[in-house]
Image 1 (cartoon, rainbow, N blue to C red):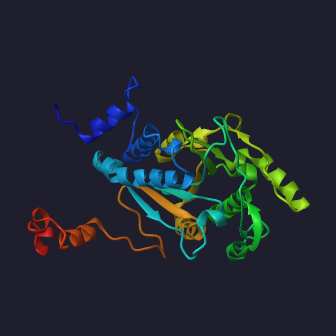
Image 2: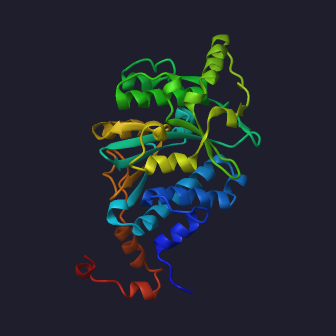
Image 3: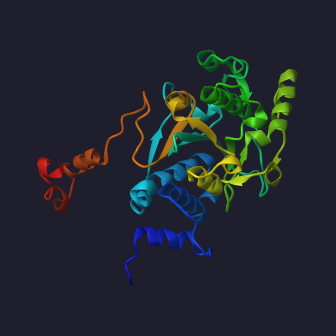
Length: 327
């Protein structure tokens, strides 16, 4: 059997139905292979949202260095993950978001998307309704002062309202402008269907906001009803991430992403980490660590501890390079 290169194997997985292969980079195929793996294993049929999200992010993380090694230097990628910092509160309960994804290294700008994962309530619909007694920022979201808006007040608030409020905060931090709900196309409900992963942006759900605002006046919240996925202009996560990872994407193809100037990126990362977990994908080498984020051990540091441990087999511990030779 002939030996296949990694890139040849990647192409064999993705191109079997195509007459000709499209232009790809390591980040594109990382996203595409991870999503295919999730769906072909039937993961979304078997477990709840939280472990599916962990499986998805883990697949991105594991595949990124492998796919990067299959491409030329100018097409490589890296992946980093930073958990929410500064609080022991449950991330999702506070912000309504499961994770944020930043793609860096794209012609001097970065792209951001925010995700809240949901299981479908039927083969064609999902429900956004969820109430938890946590911090509500909806009354402070009109302020242009980030510190003021982060305070909030304890109340029972729909998850949708929290996600909307925090998305507006992030939008203001990025572009110094206030956003209407129908403009927030970069915050998504990600629905874990058995054979697809449709994303519906908040911009397509302004009627849900109106229902909740009316309920707030009456002093009690209830479900706004199930949402027909096909009627909300969904885009599959496969294509949303493919477009986001393509440096040439622009205009309509970038719907679903908030473009951020590199000069604003540091502040955006810090702001995001107060609300939710942050994943950073980058073309080329790993980006600089987020200020205040955890210090991540290198591959060499971890392997050194493993190979020098008492439980390491002789084949590993007995063949260690000297420190000078390892450099």
